[in-house]
Length: 525
Image (cartoon, rainbow, N blue to C red; front, side, top):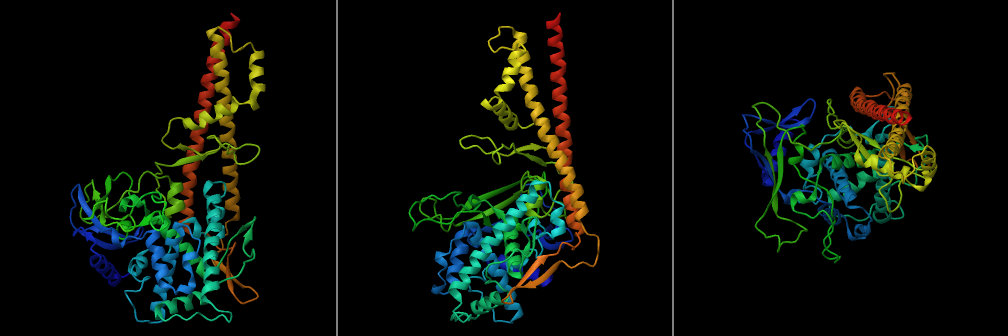
């Protein structure tokens, strides 16, 4: 964005009653891009910004804007989308329409349902480096980490959501001859023409970019949809922050609203800094909570800074204690220190992923970087599994050592308890060693897959029988240095936790072995 864009955005803030601290100004930071800076010293407990809830984007307002954009024959009211995808769809359409207005030099109409947030959407970075937008070679560097599987799943889900919308558009806004339905509004007509040219209404795709069973093929419009997905995921706030419920509160369809995370323009421009104390608060408007409907709450969101900010420095928000895995996967950045990093561990069973109906077995456990021991839930699950019927042979073996459960000897009871704990930590050690081995192997394999040629093409373009274009993420495209650097920080954090976890488990086993030697030696005497 240039200076004129900054002024336009600030003008949009003012016209929508956003109350911005007069000390703040917008600048383009080389690292964090569009950011707020202090033009004079901001003392502790300063209010940075107050945003009226009326301009916030919710799943409900996104759906209403889309329904009011297209003619009745579009039947968007029957479109089966999640609350999440209604916001993504709104961002997608707004971005495409914004480009249409500029390219076709159309006369703008600020009252158009998809133009209300055009300046806001334009302020969102064009490139958001979440794994959803990685090149094929970059994705290989995530192998062996939870982010690889999560990214593949997101690629699949975003494709499914996009194609759901695409098929609906094709079915209800195109006639049999392939011409657009009668649309009188010039902006909407331009939007539909652009979507058609982008190849948005596509038929079933073939595995043109499939590798190891994963489909990495894409298209220009699918990439815009995924941009909207990343924009929403990296900037969303909980709905309670604007006075909306977290869950559906009405069983009456006429009163029901779409519930989900919300976008709060201007507030989401503040970047994250760990350890900077702030408060997000909702200030209700004049309508009392008992009389106003939750569908369109009136009030404002306030960001208060509980830390001083010197003149000339960037003014930061605090997104909370998040690991680099979450930051990289959802926001597209990492913190070098990684102080809130965590290792995800999950016990599997022979018949699947480890989940057992009616129990907590198979859930994910998080070993935090700053933790001095294993997660209690993980140790509890291992103990429960070892004590199950599947491990009676272990109990029989211990009984054969003279460790009968009804033994009255306190030493024998302690021996039995120590053997049980040794089994727990041995099981955990095997889990960690296997994970570390796979992690190291994937790191080496990922490096082998990374091309070093500087002139490689990022996408290859292929067309189906009907001439529709598909882009395939080229395996020969080189890794961008920024992506490599972030993945390196993430993997180093995971490796550190793994090494520390293995060392801790072995120290526990050594302590148990020392105590067993003492007890068994005393029995021999």
